[in-house]
Image 1 (cartoon, helix red, strand yellow):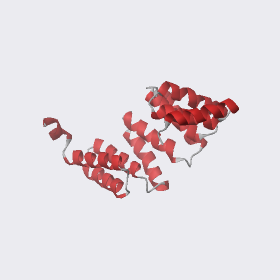
Image 2 (cartoon, rainbow, N blue to C red; image 1 turned 180 degrees about the vertical axis):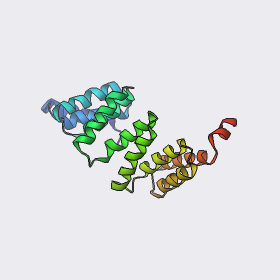
Image 3 (cartoon, rainbow, N blue to C red; image 1 turned 90 degrees about the vertical axis):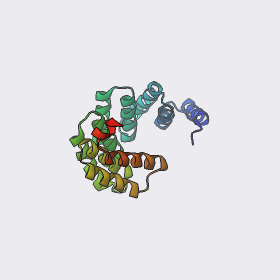
Image 4 (spheres, rainbow, N blue to C red; image 1 turned 30 degrees about the vertical axis):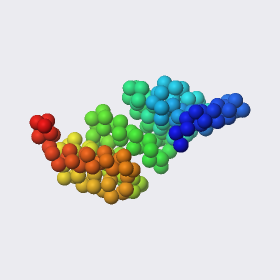
Length: 180
């Protein structure tokens, strides 16, 4: 609920009672991640991971934090470990696909997204990212198709605005966009 101060107090009280409460370490990591205090987030996620090294969710958010700290190789390793730990959890797979897009490994990312589409067909962010990949491949028809599917799946208002902007940019090829 974005009441970070109160949330931090609750987690810290829980840690005073039991310093091995990985959920409190994780909770504090999430607060710091949302506040973009990535160094603090990494510390807290690492403590949670030390206590519970079998949680793909903790690994996933630790990977996300490492990516934010510009430690891409470590982040990718952690996401792969999260996937290996729980292959049914779509979050680390999606985050890995996003990282691969940033690294320019579009075909690898597309393979992961195709797999994700099968197990979570109603997740708009998957289709939006596929649209972005097709746009980068200059396959504008497929890009618009996937953006449209993403919109049909009722994303948040913020995501819908981003998708609509991406559709508009897909309608104007990059060469023409540069002229404006």
